[in-house]
Length: 235
Image (cartoon, rainbow, N blue to C red; front, side, top):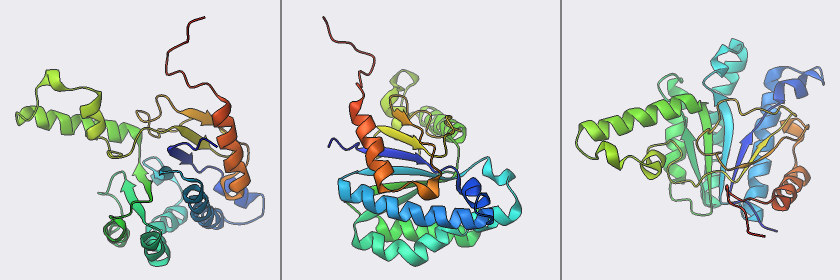
């Protein structure tokens, strides 16, 4: 099996999954978080080297306060329950996105988890938290502008490599396979630069029900596609 080096997950459908079971949206997010841990275990087992998951977008601040309050606690839960396990499994955790709007306790958990797992060499997990690709690209442009203003580079030296080095995901290769659960077929401001040549897969299943079998099926479909990167063979 040809395993994608980098898989991106838009973990959609937690709220609808909960509603169908007469549960709260918070309950759905809790189950979705538990499922993420399970899926990460599978990814590591099969040899995926990089995972980027969409946990909280820059637009999610418009959701009900109770839901936001729970989602702000997710990094704290990751630190308390899983930071040690990630370290033992040599999994490196990066949080990508804005950090100026999140609560102090959440920020502390993020920074501590990153510090504890910084030497992980088996798999890198990027957790997109208060993340939006528009914000990432805007930030990238500002960083590059500062490099030019400080005479670190010239305008003519700006290329794809310089841009990649100033994105939040620097150090991770571009995404090979992007999976969005729940059947929705849109990107929602996620990794717009990094998915330029990704294969997309949109299973109808909600994220809490996306299990190992669905992941392996997604990889099978990925392997059935001809990734030409704009080129064609003669004949």
